[in-house]
Length: 188
Image (tube, rainbow, N blue to C red; front, top):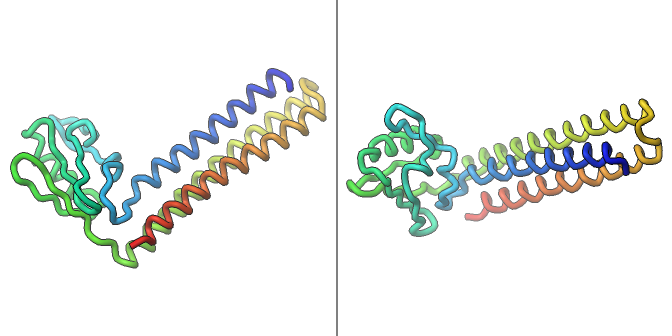
């Protein structure tokens, strides 16, 4: 394979890998009724006038399947953290004892589980669309190289087969993430 084709393929693999990683992060932020610090990864708190990620302002301790303790590093940020939690889409009601914030995750209703599964499927489909877009752009680049005479048709065909295998591998990874998330959501 020519160096140019190899570079195009490496770039495609990297971009597809990033799409899968984004899907993994998105899936981890969908709550499942179980307490987990990653639920709070996308939350920001208004801290001294600047939106600051909650992860930078506090430590998290999972006490049991549904309880999380959030211990702020700076006690003065307690009310701002509490406000951000209350306004989030997590549906939690934080309790504050002056030193730490206790969150008991509410049990998910059947309807809510179905909504979260729908959300997970949407995020999974978005990731697969991103993978397919990378495939289309890479295939266009390969076709252009063949047309311009930079690479031969045989090499172009080999590169396209490799591209299809790469696309399938990454789409399967997204499907696996989705399958695991659905199983997690359906487990009571």
